[in-house]
Length: 376
Image: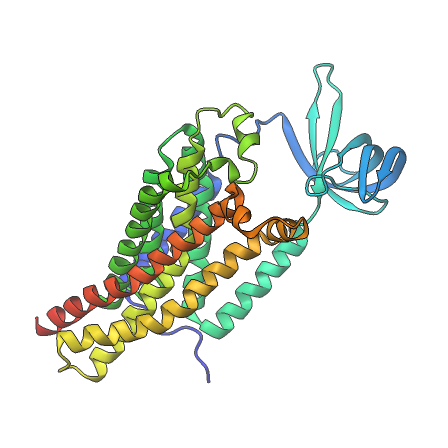
């Protein structure tokens, strides 16, 4: 019979319990930048729509929808409210409502004491929960206890980014320094949680941390020659105009470079560390130099696919941007110099540098740690 849960070490269980408690605390701690208690939220259903004030311009709709929403869940359940939905002509921001749509709503009191309602967007939490639940079930069935730890590392990373890193960014802390230490902390959590408190985990952490550091240093060195403007980040101008003009967008952009590549860096570090650990267990008398070159050989294969993976990830995020340049017949040389396009080149190349350097660094670190520990 296939065993989902294997033997659990005491140190591993203590670490897991610590992370569970930390996740619960982070989840319960309110975000200081969230709206205050005068706002209440719920789920509603659109029961009628008036589109008389909406004009169609090609594929764009502009104007005001007047809608009636019946509260299905939350405060004022069962009541019907009239509200409006403003269409500004931007498809990525507008939501065109129809009768029967389930929507997430925000309610607040006016100075006169009346309750007003605003449609936030379509209600998607249900399908998001189902999709995540299916992912968790499949992961646990396939990976067993490792799958459970993977879900825990996923939730910890998400909560740390949302509840710690983002608010500190908004408070004005240096994004590069702050993101580097948070990435290191999350790298240690993920690697030691999944890989265990063993030589393999230590080698993977040191190799991954070295790769992230090299990515940071390279981004600092080449950011000035590239003349990258951090305003290429989505909604960056909106952020500045929302009372956060003190933010350094260029440093936020540099932080996004190694944050985006850190996951792939962790994969390479763990792949090489696990492979070297397996080699040492099968051939205990292997020499340091031979073990190191074994790590190099594994690294060459992993780096080849990971660099392309990074390219696909960045290209996928800006697919329509690339298509827009091509559709307008922009000259290739001109395109390579445009701020938006060159920023993606910067991310891809610097991130790939980090991946390539992680492989030999992990192999060198692993060769000495595995053999030294073996001798002891």
